[in-house]
Amino acid sequence: MMRQGGFLIRGGGVAILLTMGLLACPKVLFAASAEENYKWYCSQCHGLEGRGNGINAGQLAVKARDHTDRSDPNKYMRNLSDKIIFKTIKFGGEANKKSSLMPPWDGVLSDDEIRDLVKYLRKLCCE
Ligand code: HEC
Image (cartoon, rainbow, N blue to C red; front, side):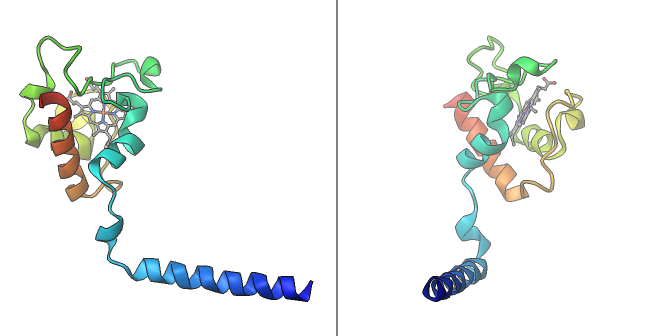
């Protein structure tokens, strides 16, 4: 029993050292890629591939945008400016007179992360 206890304490010490090491590293090492952020924060409504068919999509009174434009003959996303897309992501749909079902991400995602997401959306819609 004693030996086991000692082992646990040593194990805890290693974990604490590891955590301190990680905290000391610059944040940039841990910044998530736009694709990861999209999968994590956006896919439940917009779908893992951005086609507007996420797991919540059926519950939304306003359809989540198909970011690939594939279901849209008018190619809505292609015609949005980067500035508008940035504003919608940061301040939510309402900021551009769109549905408030599109949530604001200010405070969750940094401006840099949002800029990367805009680039990611450009790839989804237009490449
Ligand atoms: C809770 C569901 C939900 C989540 C999560 C969500 N969205 Fe949306 N999003 C919507 C809905 C609904 C619309 C359609 C709004 C409309 O047409 O009025 C939309 C529209 C958009 C649009 C198009 C805006 C426009 O001008 O029509 C963009 C760009 C967008 N979302 C980006 C994102 C990004 C990036 C994320 C993740 C950081 C995200 N959304 C997460 C529901 C969601």
